[in-house]
Image (cartoon, rainbow, N blue to C red; front, top):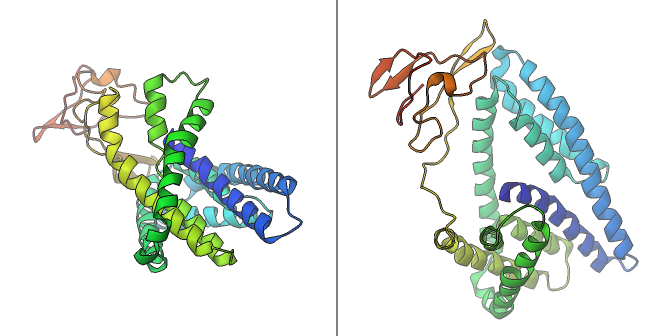
Amino acid sequence: MLGAESGINDPTAVALTLGFIAWLTEPAYGVGDLAVLLVRQLGLGLVIGVVLGIVAARRLPRLPLDLSPFAPVASVASAAVAYGLADAAGGSGFLAVYIVALCIGNTRTPHRRTIISFHEGLAFTAQVGLFVVLGLLVFPSELGSVAAASIALTAVLVFVARPLAVLASTAFLGFDLREKLFVSWAGLRGAVPIVLATFALSSGLTASDTIFNAVFFVVLLSALVQGLTLGPLARRLGLAGEQHPLYAAPLEVGAVRELGADIVEHVVQAGDPLVGIRVRETGLPRDALVMLIVRDGVGVPPRGSTVLEAGDTG
């Protein structure tokens, strides 16, 4: 839910930032212009993203296996085309790219692992570049002048604005009070607000340095206060389950090219729903075969009556 919220919030925040900058720099700009901008940005971004996402999701699986190393290039090209078309049409390129990524990421394709691995590395590189740029723009000596106002702004965002927004948006979703409290506290501010604050710097707004420093201070305070207390709060509210290792996607071991199929490896972790059930009860697709189960270093020929245990590798 928080991932979906982030995907919707970021394009909206970009559109609002552009609109408010135009409001401050153009005398004739008003509320009506801002509303039109929001509708155009989100509407066109959504439509273009859905159309190109469907096209990319249908074409990528048909890429020959011999060209599998070029699948990440095709995915990046799809994102670039989506952003360019949406931006040229006056829509949100960020929303279009997000929708295209959702479509590609949820498509069954033999190139899935290659695409995911490439984009994980690309995302890490982008994060490094982002924080290098932020480090060049932030001067700790200037943060003291905005500390008091930033603390007050953080308090309003954390204790007033975020809870009210969560209560309004989850009114009909069936969440209980504990879950609403946790989601209210989980609204961390990340690097995106800082990036949006650079828009003010590049636009030459009055007091743009103060705006940037205040936003940076709010993000830093939010990460320290909310980020460090999420776990204890979840346990206090009774919402924390067992600690599980980080999710690891099944590894691509190889491709049976003649059949157009994949061989994948999966490890059954303690607490998985698979523990204690028979192979025939796993709910695998009819065209999927369990070829071998490795248990305590010994290969076990799988049968329909074989009971899966924690630690099994199949």
